[in-house]
View 1 (cartoon, one colour):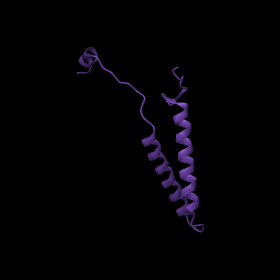
View 2: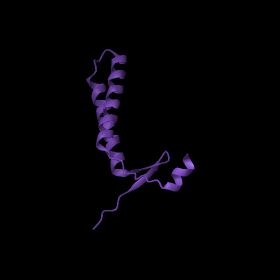
View 3: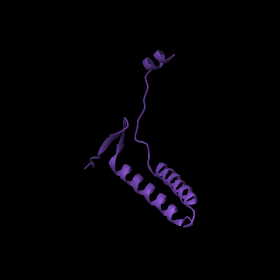
View 4: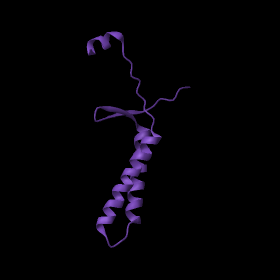
Length: 82
């Protein structure tokens, strides 16, 4: 039996709900994790550690989430582009 996947539209793009939730979780954990690892006295370092965590979460999510688009073109479309 084939499993039905839940898709939602965000900013004109369609994503699978499971991948979206996983990416949000990874980004939140890495952002807050690095934020709390920063030295207590420096709010600037806490900001940069948090931003670094967000970037790390984005990279990890990008590597784990595979694209689901299938792009095809026909010769007729190619002739209109030229």
